[in-house]
Length: 594
Image (cartoon, rainbow, N blue to C red; front, side, top):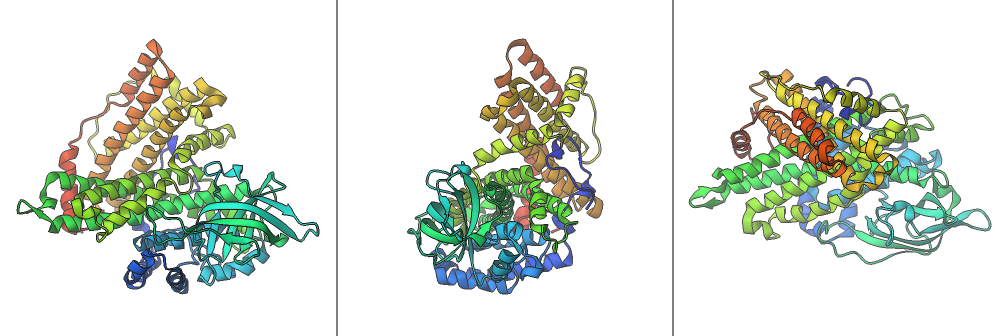
Protein backbone atom coordinates (compact mmCIF):
# COMPACT_ATOMS: atom_id res chain seq x y z
CA UNK A 1 0.00 0.00 0.00
CA UNK A 2 1.14 3.54 -0.69
CA UNK A 3 1.03 6.78 1.30
CA UNK A 4 -1.69 7.65 3.76
CA UNK A 5 -4.78 9.14 2.17
CA UNK A 6 -6.82 11.98 3.66
CA UNK A 7 -10.40 10.97 4.35
CA UNK A 8 -12.83 12.35 1.79
CA UNK A 9 -10.05 13.32 -0.64
CA UNK A 10 -11.41 10.94 -3.28
CA UNK A 11 -13.85 13.65 -4.44
CA UNK A 12 -11.07 16.04 -5.42
CA UNK A 13 -8.12 13.79 -6.32
CA UNK A 14 -7.69 10.64 -8.39
CA UNK A 15 -6.02 7.57 -6.93
CA UNK A 16 -3.84 5.14 -8.82
CA UNK A 17 -4.98 1.52 -8.89
CA UNK A 18 -1.79 0.44 -7.15
CA UNK A 19 -2.76 2.51 -4.11
CA UNK A 20 -5.86 0.53 -3.17
CA UNK A 21 -6.37 -2.83 -1.50
CA UNK A 22 -8.52 -5.40 -3.30
CA UNK A 23 -9.52 -8.98 -2.44
CA UNK A 24 -7.03 -10.13 -5.04
CA UNK A 25 -4.27 -8.79 -2.76
CA UNK A 26 -5.05 -11.24 0.05
CA UNK A 27 -2.09 -13.18 1.43
CA UNK A 28 -2.08 -16.92 2.01
CA UNK A 29 -2.72 -16.19 5.70
CA UNK A 30 -5.77 -14.13 4.78
CA UNK A 31 -7.12 -16.96 2.64
CA UNK A 32 -6.58 -19.42 5.50
CA UNK A 33 -8.53 -17.14 7.85
CA UNK A 34 -11.38 -17.04 5.33
CA UNK A 35 -11.34 -20.82 5.02
CA UNK A 36 -11.31 -21.31 8.80
CA UNK A 37 -14.30 -18.99 9.17
CA UNK A 38 -16.24 -20.66 6.36
CA UNK A 39 -15.55 -24.11 7.80
CA UNK A 40 -16.72 -22.99 11.23
CA UNK A 41 -19.96 -21.57 9.83
CA UNK A 42 -20.75 -24.53 7.57
CA UNK A 43 -19.60 -27.26 9.94
CA UNK A 44 -20.58 -25.91 13.35
CA UNK A 45 -23.14 -23.12 13.04
CA UNK A 46 -25.33 -24.10 10.08
CA UNK A 47 -26.21 -27.55 11.52
CA UNK A 48 -27.64 -25.67 14.54
CA UNK A 49 -29.40 -23.07 12.42
CA UNK A 50 -32.96 -24.05 13.29
CA UNK A 51 -32.25 -23.96 17.04
CA UNK A 52 -30.39 -20.64 16.81
CA UNK A 53 -33.31 -19.01 15.00
CA UNK A 54 -35.52 -19.93 17.96
CA UNK A 55 -33.29 -17.74 20.16
CA UNK A 56 -31.41 -20.33 22.21
CA UNK A 57 -29.20 -18.33 24.61
CA UNK A 58 -27.14 -21.28 25.81
CA UNK A 59 -26.45 -22.54 22.30
CA UNK A 60 -25.51 -19.07 21.07
CA UNK A 61 -23.05 -18.58 23.91
CA UNK A 62 -21.61 -22.07 23.42
CA UNK A 63 -21.01 -21.44 19.72
CA UNK A 64 -19.57 -18.00 20.40
CA UNK A 65 -17.04 -19.62 22.72
CA UNK A 66 -16.25 -22.15 20.02
CA UNK A 67 -15.58 -19.21 17.71
CA UNK A 68 -13.37 -17.76 20.42
CA UNK A 69 -11.37 -20.99 20.58
CA UNK A 70 -10.62 -20.57 16.87
CA UNK A 71 -9.53 -16.96 17.35
CA UNK A 72 -12.52 -15.52 15.51
CA UNK A 73 -13.41 -13.21 18.41
CA UNK A 74 -9.92 -11.86 19.08
CA UNK A 75 -8.82 -10.45 15.74
CA UNK A 76 -9.14 -6.82 16.88
CA UNK A 77 -7.86 -7.39 20.42
CA UNK A 78 -4.09 -6.77 20.93
CA UNK A 79 -1.94 -9.81 21.64
CA UNK A 80 -0.83 -8.41 24.99
CA UNK A 81 -4.47 -8.60 26.14
CA UNK A 82 -5.20 -12.12 24.93
CA UNK A 83 -6.23 -11.40 21.36
CA UNK A 84 -4.58 -11.97 17.99
CA UNK A 85 -3.95 -8.33 17.07
CA UNK A 86 -4.53 -8.99 13.37
CA UNK A 87 -4.73 -6.41 10.61
CA UNK A 88 -8.10 -5.00 9.57
CA UNK A 89 -8.08 -7.11 6.42
CA UNK A 90 -8.22 -10.23 8.59
CA UNK A 91 -11.06 -8.99 10.79
CA UNK A 92 -12.95 -7.86 7.69
CA UNK A 93 -12.55 -11.30 6.11
CA UNK A 94 -13.91 -12.91 9.27
CA UNK A 95 -16.92 -10.59 9.34
CA UNK A 96 -17.70 -11.21 5.68
CA UNK A 97 -17.54 -14.98 5.96
CA UNK A 98 -19.59 -15.09 9.15
CA UNK A 99 -22.53 -13.50 7.30
CA UNK A 100 -23.92 -16.90 6.26
CA UNK A 101 -24.53 -17.59 9.95
CA UNK A 102 -27.52 -15.18 9.86
CA UNK A 103 -28.51 -13.90 13.31
CA UNK A 104 -25.58 -15.65 14.93
CA UNK A 105 -23.28 -13.46 12.84
CA UNK A 106 -25.01 -10.42 14.34
CA UNK A 107 -24.43 -11.75 17.87
CA UNK A 108 -20.72 -12.13 17.13
CA UNK A 109 -20.55 -8.83 15.26
CA UNK A 110 -22.05 -6.86 18.14
CA UNK A 111 -19.67 -8.58 20.55
CA UNK A 112 -16.39 -8.12 18.66
CA UNK A 113 -17.25 -4.69 17.27
CA UNK A 114 -19.27 -2.18 19.22
CA UNK A 115 -19.16 -4.32 22.37
CA UNK A 116 -15.42 -4.95 22.69
CA UNK A 117 -13.76 -2.12 20.76
CA UNK A 118 -14.71 0.65 23.22
CA UNK A 119 -12.44 -1.06 25.76
CA UNK A 120 -9.76 -1.81 23.13
CA UNK A 121 -9.62 1.84 22.08
CA UNK A 122 -10.51 3.79 25.22
CA UNK A 123 -9.98 1.48 28.16
CA UNK A 124 -7.30 2.04 30.78
CA UNK A 125 -4.53 -0.59 31.01
CA UNK A 126 -6.30 -1.98 34.07
CA UNK A 127 -9.65 -2.19 32.26
CA UNK A 128 -8.00 -3.88 29.30
CA UNK A 129 -6.26 -6.46 31.49
CA UNK A 130 -9.48 -7.15 33.37
CA UNK A 131 -11.91 -7.50 30.48
CA UNK A 132 -10.24 -8.07 27.11
CA UNK A 133 -8.83 -11.59 27.62
CA UNK A 134 -12.29 -12.94 28.44
CA UNK A 135 -13.91 -10.98 25.62
CA UNK A 136 -11.32 -12.29 23.14
CA UNK A 137 -12.18 -15.91 23.97
CA UNK A 138 -15.91 -15.55 24.48
CA UNK A 139 -15.65 -16.40 28.16
CA UNK A 140 -17.63 -13.18 28.55
CA UNK A 141 -19.95 -11.59 26.01
CA UNK A 142 -20.30 -7.84 25.40
CA UNK A 143 -23.19 -5.54 24.50
CA UNK A 144 -23.34 -1.87 23.49
CA UNK A 145 -26.00 0.33 25.11
CA UNK A 146 -26.63 3.70 23.48
CA UNK A 147 -30.23 3.92 22.21
CA UNK A 148 -33.01 5.02 24.57
CA UNK A 149 -36.80 5.21 24.21
CA UNK A 150 -36.60 8.96 23.47
CA UNK A 151 -33.18 9.15 21.80
CA UNK A 152 -32.18 7.19 18.73
CA UNK A 153 -30.48 9.34 16.10
CA UNK A 154 -30.06 12.06 18.72
CA UNK A 155 -27.70 9.98 20.85
CA UNK A 156 -26.58 12.95 22.95
CA UNK A 157 -30.19 13.47 24.01
CA UNK A 158 -29.90 10.50 26.36
CA UNK A 159 -31.82 10.70 29.63
CA UNK A 160 -29.93 8.02 31.59
CA UNK A 161 -27.97 9.70 34.40
CA UNK A 162 -24.93 8.91 36.51
CA UNK A 163 -24.38 10.53 39.91
CA UNK A 164 -21.19 10.25 41.92
CA UNK A 165 -21.89 8.63 45.29
CA UNK A 166 -21.24 10.54 48.49
CA UNK A 167 -18.15 8.45 49.25
CA UNK A 168 -16.80 9.04 45.72
CA UNK A 169 -16.38 5.31 45.04
CA UNK A 170 -19.29 4.69 42.67
CA UNK A 171 -21.38 6.27 39.94
CA UNK A 172 -25.07 5.62 40.51
CA UNK A 173 -26.92 4.98 37.26
CA UNK A 174 -30.62 5.56 36.65
CA UNK A 175 -32.48 5.25 33.37
CA UNK A 176 -33.08 2.78 30.55
CA UNK A 177 -31.75 1.59 27.20
CA UNK A 178 -33.63 0.12 24.24
CA UNK A 179 -32.98 -2.41 21.46
CA UNK A 180 -29.78 -3.79 22.98
CA UNK A 181 -28.26 -6.62 20.92
CA UNK A 182 -26.92 -9.56 23.00
CA UNK A 183 -28.71 -8.22 26.09
CA UNK A 184 -30.14 -11.61 27.04
CA UNK A 185 -26.80 -13.31 27.56
CA UNK A 186 -24.17 -10.54 27.73
CA UNK A 187 -21.88 -10.18 30.72
CA UNK A 188 -20.31 -6.79 29.98
CA UNK A 189 -22.32 -3.74 28.93
CA UNK A 190 -20.94 -0.48 27.52
CA UNK A 191 -23.48 2.02 28.86
CA UNK A 192 -23.76 5.74 28.12
CA UNK A 193 -25.13 8.11 30.74
CA UNK A 194 -24.91 11.79 31.66
CA UNK A 195 -22.89 12.54 34.77
CA UNK A 196 -24.75 15.15 36.73
CA UNK A 197 -27.41 15.08 34.04
CA UNK A 198 -25.21 16.97 31.57
CA UNK A 199 -21.82 15.31 30.89
CA UNK A 200 -22.30 12.49 28.38
CA UNK A 201 -20.00 9.67 29.49
CA UNK A 202 -19.42 5.93 29.06
CA UNK A 203 -19.29 3.19 31.68
CA UNK A 204 -18.49 -0.52 31.85
CA UNK A 205 -21.39 -2.20 33.64
CA UNK A 206 -21.36 -5.87 34.64
CA UNK A 207 -24.22 -8.34 34.57
CA UNK A 208 -25.70 -8.99 38.00
CA UNK A 209 -25.09 -5.55 39.48
CA UNK A 210 -27.97 -4.79 41.92
CA UNK A 211 -30.64 -2.62 40.32
CA UNK A 212 -29.70 -3.67 36.79
CA UNK A 213 -32.57 -5.56 35.14
CA UNK A 214 -33.64 -6.67 31.66
CA UNK A 215 -36.96 -6.29 29.92
CA UNK A 216 -38.53 -8.98 27.71
CA UNK A 217 -37.25 -9.98 24.29
CA UNK A 218 -38.51 -7.80 21.47
CA UNK A 219 -40.58 -9.58 18.81
CA UNK A 220 -38.76 -8.54 15.66
CA UNK A 221 -39.40 -8.65 11.92
CA UNK A 222 -36.04 -10.31 11.30
CA UNK A 223 -32.76 -11.26 13.00
CA UNK A 224 -34.92 -13.45 15.22
CA UNK A 225 -31.99 -15.53 16.44
CA UNK A 226 -30.34 -12.54 18.10
CA UNK A 227 -31.24 -11.27 21.54
CA UNK A 228 -32.76 -7.77 21.62
CA UNK A 229 -33.97 -6.52 24.99
CA UNK A 230 -34.35 -3.26 26.90
CA UNK A 231 -32.24 -2.52 30.00
CA UNK A 232 -33.27 -0.74 33.18
CA UNK A 233 -31.03 0.92 35.76
CA UNK A 234 -32.34 1.74 39.20
CA UNK A 235 -29.61 3.08 41.49
CA UNK A 236 -27.04 0.77 39.90
CA UNK A 237 -23.67 1.30 41.60
CA UNK A 238 -20.82 1.26 39.09
CA UNK A 239 -17.26 1.47 40.50
CA UNK A 240 -15.53 4.73 39.56
CA UNK A 241 -12.75 2.71 37.95
CA UNK A 242 -15.35 1.52 35.41
CA UNK A 243 -15.69 4.97 33.90
CA UNK A 244 -14.60 4.50 30.28
CA UNK A 245 -12.59 7.43 28.98
CA UNK A 246 -13.20 10.84 30.48
CA UNK A 247 -16.27 12.45 32.01
CA UNK A 248 -18.11 14.40 29.34
CA UNK A 249 -16.16 12.77 26.52
CA UNK A 250 -18.50 9.86 25.91
CA UNK A 251 -19.44 11.26 22.52
CA UNK A 252 -15.88 10.64 21.31
CA UNK A 253 -16.26 6.97 22.19
CA UNK A 254 -19.81 6.67 20.84
CA UNK A 255 -19.12 8.28 17.48
CA UNK A 256 -15.79 6.52 16.92
CA UNK A 257 -17.35 3.15 17.70
CA UNK A 258 -20.27 3.90 15.38
CA UNK A 259 -17.75 4.48 12.59
CA UNK A 260 -16.41 0.97 13.14
CA UNK A 261 -19.93 -0.40 13.40
CA UNK A 262 -20.88 1.12 10.05
CA UNK A 263 -17.86 -0.33 8.31
CA UNK A 264 -18.35 -3.78 9.86
CA UNK A 265 -22.03 -3.71 8.90
CA UNK A 266 -21.01 -3.13 5.29
CA UNK A 267 -18.63 -6.07 5.51
CA UNK A 268 -21.42 -8.39 6.62
CA UNK A 269 -23.57 -7.14 3.74
CA UNK A 270 -20.90 -8.30 1.28
CA UNK A 271 -21.15 -11.86 2.60
CA UNK A 272 -24.95 -11.79 2.60
CA UNK A 273 -25.05 -10.52 -1.00
CA UNK A 274 -22.77 -13.32 -2.16
CA UNK A 275 -24.89 -15.95 -0.45
CA UNK A 276 -28.09 -14.52 -1.93
CA UNK A 277 -26.65 -14.58 -5.46
CA UNK A 278 -25.67 -18.22 -4.99
CA UNK A 279 -29.10 -19.17 -3.68
CA UNK A 280 -30.88 -17.28 -6.45
CA UNK A 281 -28.85 -18.57 -9.38
CA UNK A 282 -28.96 -22.19 -8.21
CA UNK A 283 -32.71 -21.94 -7.84
CA UNK A 284 -33.01 -20.28 -11.27
CA UNK A 285 -31.02 -23.09 -12.86
CA UNK A 286 -33.29 -25.79 -11.43
CA UNK A 287 -36.70 -24.11 -11.53
CA UNK A 288 -38.43 -24.66 -14.87
CA UNK A 289 -41.32 -22.78 -16.42
CA UNK A 290 -42.59 -23.52 -19.94
CA UNK A 291 -40.15 -26.49 -19.94
CA UNK A 292 -37.21 -24.07 -19.61
CA UNK A 293 -34.96 -23.22 -16.63
CA UNK A 294 -35.93 -19.69 -15.63
CA UNK A 295 -32.25 -18.67 -15.67
CA UNK A 296 -32.51 -18.71 -19.48
CA UNK A 297 -35.11 -15.95 -19.48
CA UNK A 298 -33.42 -12.58 -20.12
CA UNK A 299 -35.28 -10.73 -17.36
CA UNK A 300 -34.08 -13.24 -14.78
CA UNK A 301 -30.58 -12.97 -16.23
CA UNK A 302 -30.74 -9.19 -15.92
CA UNK A 303 -31.56 -9.53 -12.22
CA UNK A 304 -28.62 -11.86 -11.66
CA UNK A 305 -26.30 -9.54 -13.58
CA UNK A 306 -27.39 -6.48 -11.59
CA UNK A 307 -27.02 -8.37 -8.30
CA UNK A 308 -23.49 -9.43 -9.25
CA UNK A 309 -22.48 -5.95 -10.46
CA UNK A 310 -23.70 -4.20 -7.33
CA UNK A 311 -21.97 -6.77 -5.11
CA UNK A 312 -18.70 -6.35 -7.01
CA UNK A 313 -18.75 -2.60 -6.41
CA UNK A 314 -19.67 -3.08 -2.75
CA UNK A 315 -16.89 -5.60 -2.20
CA UNK A 316 -14.42 -3.28 -3.93
CA UNK A 317 -15.50 -0.35 -1.76
CA UNK A 318 -15.31 -2.28 1.51
CA UNK A 319 -11.80 -3.65 0.96
CA UNK A 320 -10.58 -0.31 -0.36
CA UNK A 321 -11.68 1.18 2.96
CA UNK A 322 -10.04 -1.68 4.85
CA UNK A 323 -6.78 -0.86 3.10
CA UNK A 324 -7.11 2.79 4.13
CA UNK A 325 -7.45 1.69 7.75
CA UNK A 326 -4.43 -0.59 7.70
CA UNK A 327 -2.26 2.04 6.04
CA UNK A 328 -3.25 4.59 8.67
CA UNK A 329 -2.72 2.11 11.53
CA UNK A 330 0.60 0.62 10.44
CA UNK A 331 2.82 3.04 12.40
CA UNK A 332 0.95 2.76 15.72
CA UNK A 333 2.83 0.87 18.43
CA UNK A 334 0.29 -1.52 20.01
CA UNK A 335 2.29 -1.52 23.27
CA UNK A 336 2.07 2.26 23.68
CA UNK A 337 -0.20 3.48 26.45
CA UNK A 338 -2.23 5.61 24.04
CA UNK A 339 -2.31 3.06 21.19
CA UNK A 340 -6.06 2.53 21.44
CA UNK A 341 -6.93 6.19 21.20
CA UNK A 342 -4.43 6.62 18.39
CA UNK A 343 -6.08 3.76 16.51
CA UNK A 344 -9.53 5.25 17.04
CA UNK A 345 -8.30 8.61 15.78
CA UNK A 346 -6.75 6.97 12.73
CA UNK A 347 -9.97 5.18 11.88
CA UNK A 348 -11.96 8.37 12.48
CA UNK A 349 -10.04 9.91 9.57
CA UNK A 350 -12.34 7.80 7.38
CA UNK A 351 -15.62 8.47 9.17
CA UNK A 352 -17.02 9.77 5.90
CA UNK A 353 -16.04 6.60 4.04
CA UNK A 354 -17.55 4.49 6.84
CA UNK A 355 -20.89 6.22 6.36
CA UNK A 356 -20.66 5.77 2.58
CA UNK A 357 -19.97 2.06 3.06
CA UNK A 358 -22.89 1.69 5.43
CA UNK A 359 -25.46 3.41 3.21
CA UNK A 360 -24.38 1.78 -0.04
CA UNK A 361 -24.01 -1.68 1.52
CA UNK A 362 -27.36 -1.71 3.30
CA UNK A 363 -29.18 -0.54 0.18
CA UNK A 364 -27.34 -2.94 -2.12
CA UNK A 365 -28.18 -5.85 0.18
CA UNK A 366 -31.82 -4.80 0.26
CA UNK A 367 -31.79 -4.72 -3.55
CA UNK A 368 -30.02 -8.07 -3.86
CA UNK A 369 -32.27 -9.72 -1.25
CA UNK A 370 -35.39 -8.36 -2.94
CA UNK A 371 -34.31 -9.57 -6.38
CA UNK A 372 -33.20 -12.91 -4.93
CA UNK A 373 -36.63 -13.42 -3.40
CA UNK A 374 -38.34 -12.35 -6.63
CA UNK A 375 -36.36 -14.95 -8.59
CA UNK A 376 -37.67 -17.58 -6.17
CA UNK A 377 -41.23 -16.46 -6.89
CA UNK A 378 -43.80 -17.83 -4.44
CA UNK A 379 -41.21 -20.11 -2.88
CA UNK A 380 -39.26 -17.04 -1.80
CA UNK A 381 -42.15 -16.15 0.50
CA UNK A 382 -41.90 -19.49 2.31
CA UNK A 383 -39.70 -19.82 5.37
CA UNK A 384 -38.31 -23.12 4.16
CA UNK A 385 -36.20 -21.13 1.68
CA UNK A 386 -33.40 -19.10 3.25
CA UNK A 387 -33.86 -16.18 0.89
CA UNK A 388 -37.04 -15.37 2.84
CA UNK A 389 -34.98 -14.90 6.01
CA UNK A 390 -32.27 -12.93 4.23
CA UNK A 391 -34.97 -10.57 2.95
CA UNK A 392 -36.35 -9.98 6.45
CA UNK A 393 -32.95 -9.80 8.12
CA UNK A 394 -31.57 -7.29 5.64
CA UNK A 395 -34.06 -4.55 6.47
CA UNK A 396 -32.56 -3.63 9.84
CA UNK A 397 -29.26 -2.60 8.25
CA UNK A 398 -30.69 0.68 7.01
CA UNK A 399 -31.55 1.52 10.63
CA UNK A 400 -28.57 0.05 12.51
CA UNK A 401 -25.55 2.24 13.35
CA UNK A 402 -27.33 5.49 12.53
CA UNK A 403 -30.15 5.51 10.00
CA UNK A 404 -29.27 5.98 6.35
CA UNK A 405 -30.91 9.40 6.51
CA UNK A 406 -28.58 10.48 9.32
CA UNK A 407 -25.58 9.07 7.48
CA UNK A 408 -26.56 10.90 4.31
CA UNK A 409 -26.40 14.15 6.28
CA UNK A 410 -23.08 13.18 7.86
CA UNK A 411 -21.32 12.42 4.56
CA UNK A 412 -21.27 15.93 3.01
CA UNK A 413 -21.35 17.53 6.46
CA UNK A 414 -18.12 15.80 7.44
CA UNK A 415 -16.53 16.76 4.12
CA UNK A 416 -17.36 20.44 4.62
CA UNK A 417 -16.04 20.36 8.19
CA UNK A 418 -12.74 18.89 6.99
CA UNK A 419 -12.55 21.65 4.41
CA UNK A 420 -13.27 24.35 7.00
CA UNK A 421 -10.46 22.97 9.18
CA UNK A 422 -8.05 23.21 6.28
CA UNK A 423 -7.65 19.44 5.99
CA UNK A 424 -8.93 19.37 2.40
CA UNK A 425 -8.67 22.08 -0.31
CA UNK A 426 -12.30 21.44 -1.20
CA UNK A 427 -13.47 25.03 -1.52
CA UNK A 428 -10.34 26.07 -3.41
CA UNK A 429 -10.91 23.23 -5.90
CA UNK A 430 -14.57 24.21 -6.29
CA UNK A 431 -13.68 27.86 -6.90
CA UNK A 432 -11.01 26.96 -9.44
CA UNK A 433 -13.46 24.70 -11.22
CA UNK A 434 -16.10 27.43 -11.45
CA UNK A 435 -13.60 29.65 -13.22
CA UNK A 436 -12.96 26.92 -15.81
CA UNK A 437 -16.49 25.69 -16.38
CA UNK A 438 -17.78 28.37 -18.72
CA UNK A 439 -14.87 27.77 -21.12
CA UNK A 440 -14.94 23.98 -20.86
CA UNK A 441 -15.36 22.32 -24.26
CA UNK A 442 -16.05 18.58 -24.39
CA UNK A 443 -14.92 16.58 -27.37
CA UNK A 444 -12.55 13.86 -26.31
CA UNK A 445 -12.63 10.44 -27.95
CA UNK A 446 -11.79 7.26 -26.09
CA UNK A 447 -10.47 4.05 -27.57
CA UNK A 448 -8.61 2.19 -24.81
CA UNK A 449 -10.19 -0.18 -22.31
CA UNK A 450 -12.02 1.72 -19.54
CA UNK A 451 -10.64 5.06 -20.80
CA UNK A 452 -14.08 6.60 -21.06
CA UNK A 453 -15.10 5.16 -17.69
CA UNK A 454 -12.00 6.72 -16.13
CA UNK A 455 -12.97 10.03 -17.72
CA UNK A 456 -16.55 9.72 -16.46
CA UNK A 457 -15.44 9.18 -12.87
CA UNK A 458 -13.27 12.30 -13.18
CA UNK A 459 -16.19 14.25 -14.67
CA UNK A 460 -18.47 13.00 -11.88
CA UNK A 461 -16.11 14.58 -9.37
CA UNK A 462 -16.29 17.87 -11.28
CA UNK A 463 -20.08 17.70 -11.27
CA UNK A 464 -20.03 17.14 -7.52
CA UNK A 465 -17.62 20.04 -6.98
CA UNK A 466 -19.76 22.31 -9.14
CA UNK A 467 -22.96 21.51 -7.28
CA UNK A 468 -21.34 21.31 -3.86
CA UNK A 469 -19.50 24.58 -4.39
CA UNK A 470 -22.73 26.33 -5.35
CA UNK A 471 -24.47 24.88 -2.30
CA UNK A 472 -21.81 26.16 0.09
CA UNK A 473 -21.78 29.53 -1.66
CA UNK A 474 -25.57 29.87 -1.57
CA UNK A 475 -26.37 28.58 1.90
CA UNK A 476 -23.17 29.13 3.87
CA UNK A 477 -23.60 28.18 7.51
CA UNK A 478 -27.27 27.33 6.95
CA UNK A 479 -26.40 24.47 4.56
CA UNK A 480 -27.00 21.94 7.33
CA UNK A 481 -30.70 22.90 7.26
CA UNK A 482 -31.00 22.04 3.56
CA UNK A 483 -31.33 18.32 4.17
CA UNK A 484 -32.64 17.49 0.71
CA UNK A 485 -29.62 19.12 -0.94
CA UNK A 486 -27.23 17.44 1.50
CA UNK A 487 -28.81 14.08 0.71
CA UNK A 488 -28.33 14.64 -3.03
CA UNK A 489 -24.69 15.57 -2.46
CA UNK A 490 -24.27 12.44 -0.36
CA UNK A 491 -25.78 10.26 -3.09
CA UNK A 492 -23.37 11.74 -5.60
CA UNK A 493 -20.41 11.00 -3.32
CA UNK A 494 -21.62 7.45 -2.70
CA UNK A 495 -21.88 6.71 -6.42
CA UNK A 496 -18.47 8.27 -7.08
CA UNK A 497 -16.75 6.23 -4.36
CA UNK A 498 -18.40 3.02 -5.50
CA UNK A 499 -17.64 3.61 -9.18
CA UNK A 500 -14.03 4.58 -8.56
CA UNK A 501 -13.48 1.63 -6.21
CA UNK A 502 -14.70 -0.84 -8.81
CA UNK A 503 -12.81 0.92 -11.60
CA UNK A 504 -9.49 0.85 -9.74
CA UNK A 505 -9.97 -2.79 -8.76
CA UNK A 506 -10.66 -3.76 -12.36
CA UNK A 507 -7.56 -1.91 -13.54
CA UNK A 508 -5.50 -3.97 -11.08
CA UNK A 509 -7.11 -7.12 -12.43
CA UNK A 510 -6.21 -6.11 -15.99
CA UNK A 511 -2.60 -5.50 -14.95
CA UNK A 512 -2.38 -8.92 -13.34
CA UNK A 513 -4.50 -11.12 -15.57
CA UNK A 514 -4.76 -9.32 -18.88
CA UNK A 515 -7.93 -8.05 -20.53
CA UNK A 516 -9.23 -11.46 -21.62
CA UNK A 517 -9.40 -12.91 -18.12
CA UNK A 518 -10.60 -9.58 -16.72
CA UNK A 519 -13.39 -9.21 -19.31
CA UNK A 520 -16.14 -9.99 -16.78
CA UNK A 521 -14.89 -7.29 -14.40
CA UNK A 522 -14.44 -4.86 -17.29
CA UNK A 523 -18.05 -5.36 -18.35
CA UNK A 524 -19.37 -4.96 -14.81
CA UNK A 525 -17.34 -1.78 -14.35
CA UNK A 526 -18.51 -0.37 -17.68
CA UNK A 527 -22.16 -0.93 -16.81
CA UNK A 528 -21.88 0.44 -13.29
CA UNK A 529 -19.92 3.56 -14.16
CA UNK A 530 -22.36 4.55 -16.91
CA UNK A 531 -25.42 3.86 -14.77
CA UNK A 532 -23.86 5.63 -11.80
CA UNK A 533 -23.14 8.65 -13.98
CA UNK A 534 -26.78 8.73 -15.05
CA UNK A 535 -27.75 8.88 -11.38
CA UNK A 536 -25.17 11.55 -10.57
CA UNK A 537 -26.41 13.72 -13.43
CA UNK A 538 -30.00 13.33 -12.19
CA UNK A 539 -28.99 14.21 -8.61
CA UNK A 540 -27.12 17.26 -9.88
CA UNK A 541 -30.13 18.47 -11.91
CA UNK A 542 -32.41 18.14 -8.91
CA UNK A 543 -30.00 20.01 -6.65
CA UNK A 544 -29.41 22.80 -9.16
CA UNK A 545 -33.15 23.18 -9.71
CA UNK A 546 -33.54 23.58 -5.95
CA UNK A 547 -30.83 26.24 -5.65
CA UNK A 548 -31.28 28.31 -8.81
CA UNK A 549 -33.95 29.47 -11.23
CA UNK A 550 -34.40 31.39 -14.48
CA UNK A 551 -31.35 32.25 -16.58
CA UNK A 552 -28.92 31.27 -13.83
CA UNK A 553 -30.43 27.79 -13.67
CA UNK A 554 -30.37 27.46 -17.46
CA UNK A 555 -26.68 28.40 -17.47
CA UNK A 556 -25.86 25.86 -14.77
CA UNK A 557 -27.81 23.11 -16.53
CA UNK A 558 -25.99 23.93 -19.75
CA UNK A 559 -22.65 23.50 -18.00
CA UNK A 560 -23.87 20.25 -16.46
CA UNK A 561 -24.86 18.99 -19.89
CA UNK A 562 -21.33 19.67 -21.19
CA UNK A 563 -19.74 17.89 -18.25
CA UNK A 564 -22.11 14.95 -18.71
CA UNK A 565 -21.49 14.32 -22.40
CA UNK A 566 -20.73 10.64 -23.01
CA UNK A 567 -21.31 7.84 -25.48
CA UNK A 568 -24.13 5.34 -25.21
CA UNK A 569 -23.42 1.83 -23.98
CA UNK A 570 -25.33 -1.35 -24.76
CA UNK A 571 -25.97 -2.28 -21.13
CA UNK A 572 -28.49 -4.95 -22.11
CA UNK A 573 -25.88 -6.81 -24.14
CA UNK A 574 -23.24 -6.44 -21.42
CA UNK A 575 -25.63 -7.67 -18.75
CA UNK A 576 -26.49 -10.73 -20.83
CA UNK A 577 -22.80 -11.61 -20.97
CA UNK A 578 -22.40 -11.01 -17.24
CA UNK A 579 -25.49 -13.07 -16.43
CA UNK A 580 -24.25 -15.98 -18.56
CA UNK A 581 -21.12 -16.31 -16.42
CA UNK A 582 -23.04 -16.04 -13.16
CA UNK A 583 -25.48 -18.69 -14.37
CA UNK A 584 -22.64 -20.96 -15.41
CA UNK A 585 -20.69 -20.46 -12.18
CA UNK A 586 -23.80 -20.68 -9.97
CA UNK A 587 -22.32 -18.12 -7.58
CA UNK A 588 -20.98 -14.58 -7.32
CA UNK A 589 -18.45 -14.22 -10.14
CA UNK A 590 -15.63 -11.69 -10.59
CA UNK A 591 -13.53 -13.31 -13.33
CA UNK A 592 -14.15 -14.50 -16.88
CA UNK A 593 -12.15 -17.66 -16.09
CA UNK A 594 -14.19 -19.34 -13.36
